Image (cartoon, rainbow, N blue to C red; front, side, top):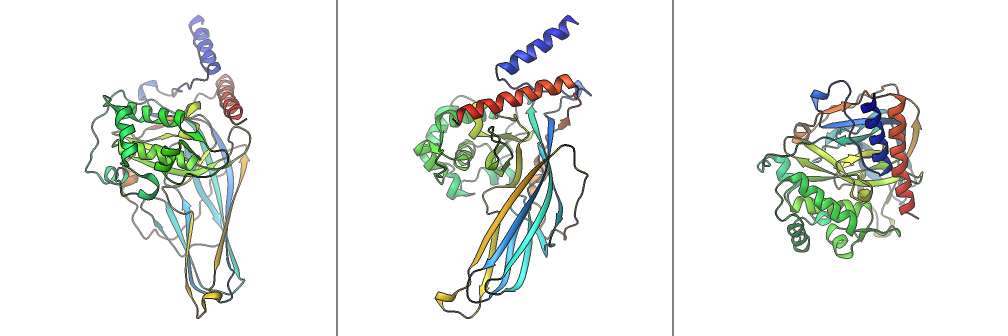
Length: 383
């Protein structure tokens, strides 16, 4: 009994100091899951897309490509539960996002069309129990070739840009463990790049590095750039955080990096001063799509027109999130057959996951307090 009390006192002290504590799965300690998700939160949300022809001539053969679902991940589960209009086809893009294709033969001047998509989502805290050593990367694999390629997303990521490469080489000199190298790069970004509260984007990893200033997308771009420059596969995640520590939500970008024989590991460098390396210390992150791409892209043909009367399609989209108190009933909609085979990404995530069965009131209280500390830290930093 005394040992148990000592353990709980130690846990509480650690939380008071702001440290992240990994949670073991109660069902089997011998299983040693690499990632453990706890304290899930449940959400319902809608995505509404409206296209309006603001020109004076019809827009012909209109085709809209809308992201329906991001690839699966271990800390959040998003399902498409309904829609106002079924896509004519779907496919997977190069990052594994499921894209819905919507077509209209013509949109008359001033005509609008609206598509509403309904979703259910679960988001969880996640911590990792990772190996101390790793084999080398399979540098000939499609995953490695894509996510370390300097030409991939080059306009934003600037992989191997000389100033970034010089800093990366300086920071990781002498380190061979990819986890340690990723951690060193993460901490440098977290403590040397200031957040631009004027919400003006730097626009690329290199510009962020030079200015030492950026918004969340810039900070994520820079971390991905430094990882790829160091030969560690990395990708961008675009999504929504339902709470930024001050009770407000908004769009956000974070990162996943790849470890050999492990898979994709999450990190959020924008909030890196509060933890968030190989962990998400909240249940707020909901991924919407992977990689640098538009959420919606639209193409159309012109009718006969002069330059001053060309049809112009305005795109408006909106997300609305609602917190739910219990797991939503599973509802899935049947989509048209995917016309393009998903890339190899899905078969490279070997990460084992366990839903923690430590659901006692005491454990819930401690975890709730941990989230409260994180919220307080972020709120104080934003003052």
